[in-house]
Figure (spheres, rainbow, N blue to C red):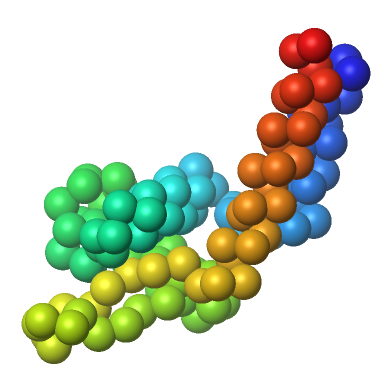
Length: 112
């Protein structure tokens, strides 16, 4: 498979299956939430702001949109009822797993 053919296929998958990832900040937020969940340390809103991804206003706006769309879920912290934990919804994890498989298979074809 040619390089740009593979890249075009990846972009088509993103356009069809991941329309909620409009910007680099959106993608970065999902990566951070997913990584934190894998490490069994889901992020709180305060921890998210301390990462200085972008301005607080931008992060709040993007997070609110992802929550509204059901991509990210907020749940109460078990030890501190004032804090919310930010996690990725199960359906979004499934789509991202498909995305990872697609990228892996395309890159495997390209680098044979």
